[in-house]
Image (tube, rainbow, N blue to C red; front, side, top):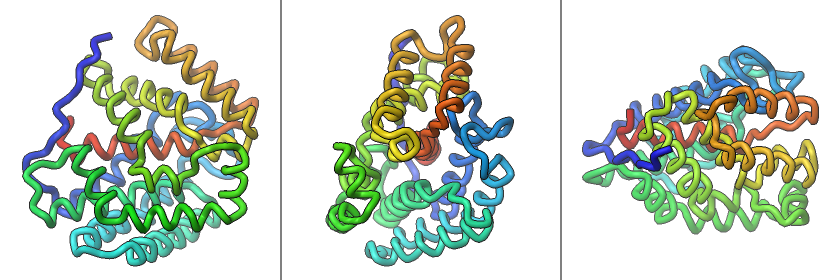
Length: 287
């Protein structure tokens, strides 16, 4: 496969409304993708007994205004406590819409921060919107606060468990400027689209690229360290054998999905990262 890259840059800054709309569309991109090992799609519930596509659509409807509002906050120069407050309010609206089911908590955090960074760039009148500029704006404006948050959450039960397993949690990923998103997911998605893959297959391969390297706390919670390593190995093997475009690629992805369901594994962190990559492509001007 040709390893080309797309010129990810948008010449004119986006409005907060367009930034927020891109986030909602990106979450739908992720939901609509199938097969998707262990994750909810439009046609199956993956490894989940408590949620389906309707649950996710209710969540998306409840969150659609949040992404616009947090982009507006970034545009207005909000500090981190303001972003955190808006995220907590959005999470409460999500839980009310889903009757207490966590569908998009990770996306509220990750896509919320990214939308705020895009809003900040738009306010600065940046000549171009690129993945590198988004990451730089995120770290420059809220990097210290995210590092402090990472230290704070490391003392909570989830953080202690993650540290005991030797894993890098979501707070640490954010403090580092989302390295898996910007160094793995976005390049993989750009390469796939540039090589001529249909968006569905490019997104599927991107999901597997992320699963292979991300310390996904959802997998560790459901399957322990053994479950996480099993998922990472399955994903890496899928990529090494040529991904979704090779003969039998989709059939293998479906077999991996069945295996994840049998093991009750669900790579929710990878799903959030895929959605974030779809968002980056949209705001940086890729088709």
